[in-house]
Length: 321
Image (cartoon, rainbow, N blue to C red; front, side):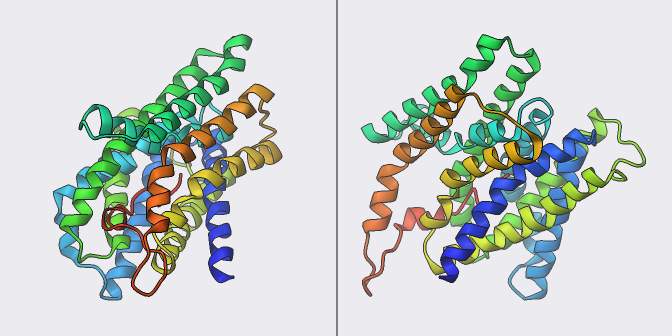
């Protein structure tokens, strides 16, 4: 019962982070500045907490591999998402973000020439058809060019995430003795520093940037609840189940993001876009179907279900938006 409760709570957290980002950038706080403060603070606090418990070594802070992971997984992904949510609704941003796992499969097949099952290939095709369906109403209505650019930027950010997720496999293998929470904290901190550097060169940050209650509340919620508490729940679930079950938040949270966006920000989704949302979710499930089936069917010596060694190493994409 506790596992199901924490899983539902985690999905709710990750589903509401897109709304919180929208609230923050709508308060006209600089998006890169907000994202940088969030991830630097969350990463630093988590790492210090782990270090004080004796579960993290300060030598991790000097690993170039973790800086590169932070560049792809945090800097690229969230620079794109925060900037794009100035022009794209939080619900649509959440659904477009769910294409990340499909992009991983595409990169593995096209760039690294890894064999992909027919079911996974079909899932990718279905998922991207869903993206087209989401776009159709905006094409018919003559959406503002910034909406199109924002949507494209989210997808580019997910491509960056896909590269980082693939690279993260080798990183976790090389640091198998380290806590995944500590590794994640370091890459978040590096990504946060890079976002602040980008902000320094591209944004004018007013003295009272966080004086607005909406911007300050968004930052506090995303840092504490989204980046710290949500991550901890994810790894708690991984420890008590397997890496597959917690990762299914990707299928649950986008509909939550659409619902809370409609409820609190009056974001509306045309019926054909709603069909596109369902298609993207179906495509994501299909694309990952072979992996899910293989992992859930592999029994352990005591009769429980365990993931394959490769999947156990691939504990990435835990942090939602």
